[in-house]
Image 1: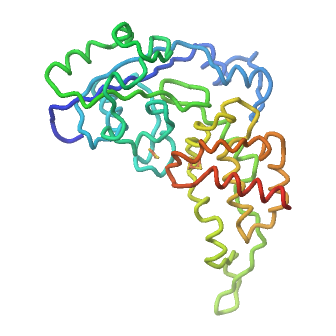
Image 2: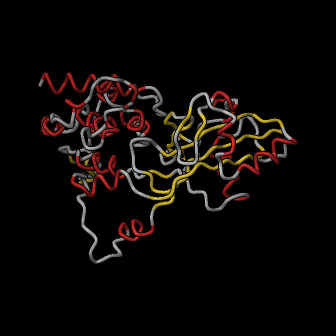
Length: 318
Ligand code: SF4
Ligand code: FES
């Protein structure tokens, strides 16, 4: 934000501070800490999914313009109001996928979400109490719920409110702190499916006949079969939207299947059959219920539900 203005926005942020002993265990500080499997399962997995700690909702009202992104607003809060607020971002341009959260309950990226698109008038949002429960149709009694409402009152007195935006960590993943969710379960599932090219390269030679490098040649038509899939940035938005993935270990998730499909459709990859075997499991393609919620907000324009359908058909036909 570069210039002063009269308009303000109110962010209702779901905050979370984990219990100190959990943070200690996560660092491996205790010699008695149990070693959990990186792929989940067991009681450690359940505890990791529902970490304990302090939860509350905090309101921040700050000057903002309709064209500002919600990431801009959080950076302003972090720099000028509350340095303790935790959120994750990197590129700021929808390329890295590190800043997926739930905005007004919808998984999406902070850096591409503008105030103009997401701010609602206060009555349009469910009211959220101190413990994070959403109450629909109760407005006056809930207005005291936030623990930092002084800023709201002061700012709205001399500015025009653009509205209210509710922010929570990405659903389907354990919260780590404030808006930061632990996306390791998704990354581990992607890693398990060997997300890299396994191909027999052809040695290319220079004009002098010397070996130059391995080449993996491909026609544009072959590239077109997976090019869109290769745009996945592993942001987790599709997983946060998927009601089956939210159940825990029952489904490896749409992002892992997108990565697998990307290599299955790559004409250079020699492991397509092994890749299909790896996802032809009860927690793989069989777990997808074709709800297609995963398609709605993919920031890279992938029709995830349609791709799920295609890969399910391909696995069954092989
Ligand atoms: S498919 Fe889309 S929504 Fe899902 S992880 Fe990849 S980029 Fe994100
Ligand atoms: S900060 Fe990189 S995608 Fe939003």
